[in-house]
Length: 123
Image (cartoon, rainbow, N blue to C red; front, side, top):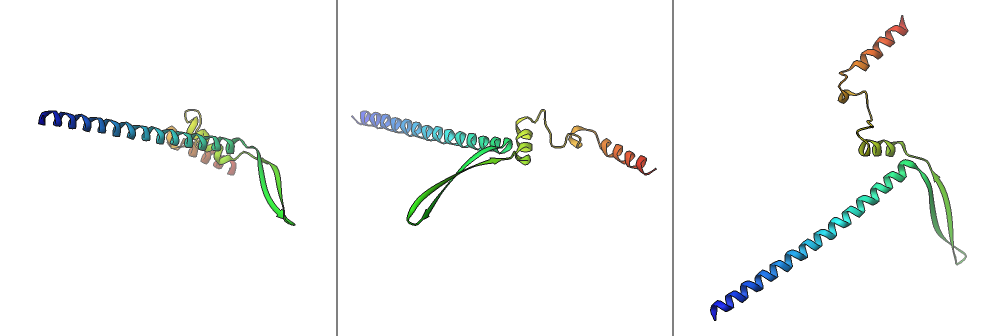
């Protein structure tokens, strides 16, 4: 009988651990999905800031005891910094902020050419 109680206790403990593990995995999946959704929202916001577009703003005002809602549609211009950031991170193989910089391996050749041009202008 003592062996049976130990076996039942071991089975109960195993079931408890299994359900606890499953619950933890479910929580982790929810967190990951939530994080992915937030990242998608941020990416979408960055893209919208980069390309510009129209924005609708609604303001609520109270005058003479009455509530009025005002809606304004604004045109938003593309933002250069957002464009650069987006391109550097999404199309890094095609786009660089400084394509003639040291990372391209020119070892200052552009600077030498510019100095030569300056010398030619001053002669």
